[in-house]
Amino acid sequence: MSFVSGICIVLGVLAGAGTHLLFRRRMWISLTTGLAVIAASLAWFLSPVCIAIAQEDLANFDPPIETRTETGMIGQRYFQQRDGVWYHCKVRIARQLFF
Image (cartoon, rainbow, N blue to C red; front, side):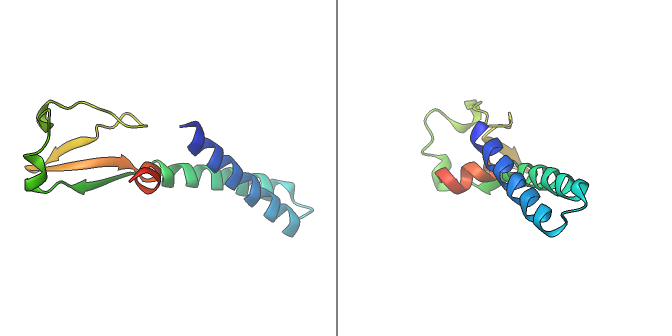
């Protein structure tokens, strides 16, 4: 989680510095832009992405998928059943960096 926070803070600082260069007399624009970028990047990186698991792969799970209770970065279960289909859910940043 600290890695994601660090990325978001760096993006916010860069956005704030960029707007400060453009709007030197209005400091609140830089601060507001920086905070908005931090909030937007946190929302983007921590939004869940779920991919359906194929029926062939479900048979190979050991222990069975129904007994798994692992949770991710934001407390969301990795394996979720929706409308009879099992999904593998991770936050966007974990899906991009780790597979």
